[in-house]
Image (cartoon, one colour):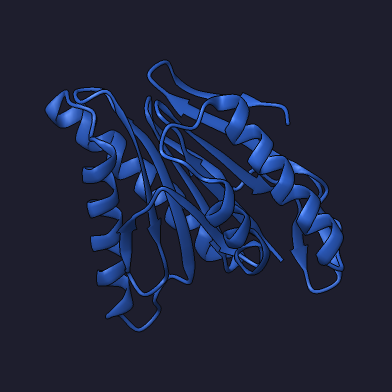
Length: 194
């Protein structure tokens, strides 16, 4: 019952992840952060099998850090998405593939533009203006379709996220215990309250 949401604005990406870790009908942890900071301008949100998600997120973060140390260069969001997709594709061809779905939000500092990528456990990677993973996609994609525009401001994006949260509260039979929302922009990654 995990949900990931993200929307790209004119100079930022706003992300949200459900904050509860649930197994069956039991809430294991009400404040689980399903995001991993990869570098100063790349953020990965993940959902899927509990062990796979944490293991894969830490593996990607460690390899991105290693690349930065070796080459003294931060990977762009597109390069990070490409590397992550390659790791998922390699895993898919193994005996024990990772069961993890990802939203990768980043800010390309050289070009001065935000980027958002949608990746799934089959190693599909697509650049998108807005995205959902998990059960939220059943209800929130139509809201994004209706209200999204390329030059969104942060206030407009927050309003769209609130509409999504309200719809999920209305339609879903479980309580997500809230969402952890983060913004990726030219200043880096920061958490915000919605």
